[in-house]
Structures are given as structure tokens and as C-alpha cells.
Image (cartoon, rainbow, N blue to C red; front, side):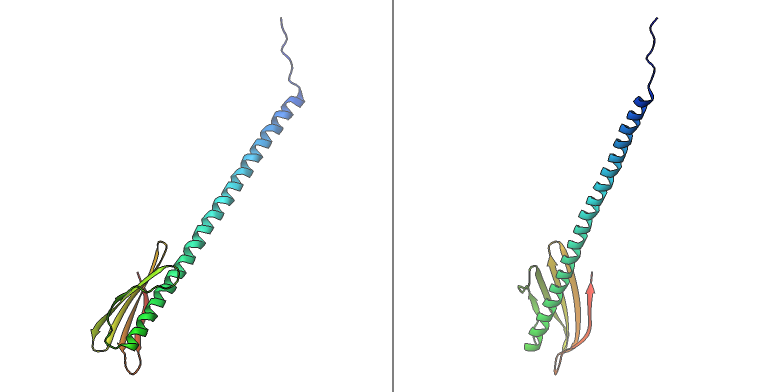
Length: 136
């Protein structure tokens, strides 16, 4: 008859140590990957917010350009795409009767578009703006 070798206590300690190291390594790897992914997501969000602020600035700058043209030529209406900054912007000035005008301006940076709408009640002797708001 053959005898089975008896398990020694130090054999099971080595196995427990190996499993513990693997579990701790897996947890550490999971935490590291989570931090990297959170950092990437944060960077994307920050970049999008930056582009959004730039697009809004372009829309407002376009609107200011339209106001300047209205001040220089009371009869001015139409659409233009001035070159301002790193994105694109457009504005449309519409005569809504008498001295009243509406300006619709938009700024685009990357895929982000921001729009503003301005209502003017009079042009002379000074431009009177009744509303200036961001629109969807």
C-alpha cells in the first residue's frame, strides 16, 4: 500500500500568499484603470466646455458686428459670415417694422453651436436693445 504524502502547513501558506497577491493586484489594476478613465472623461468634458464658451463668444461677437453695421447704416438688413476667432459665426438682421430689428447670431466651434437672439426697438438717436438672450 502506498501512503499519501501529508500536506505541510507551509504549502498552504504559499498558496494563500499567491492568491492574496493576485487579488490585491487585480484590485489595484481596477482602481488604476478607473482613475485613467475618469481623467479622460474629465478632459473631454473640459474641452467641450471650452469650445462652448468660445462658440458663445463668437455668437456675441457676431451680434456686436451686426449692431455696428446697423448703427452705420440704419436700413441694413441681411446675412453675413464675418471671420472672427477660430470658429465660424453668422448673423441675420431682419427688419420687423420701423426702426425695430431682430438679430439672430450663431457661433460654431467644432461641433458646438451657440445662438443668440437680439431684439432692437429703435436705432436713432441710439440703439435700444429690448432683449439679448441665448436661444436653443
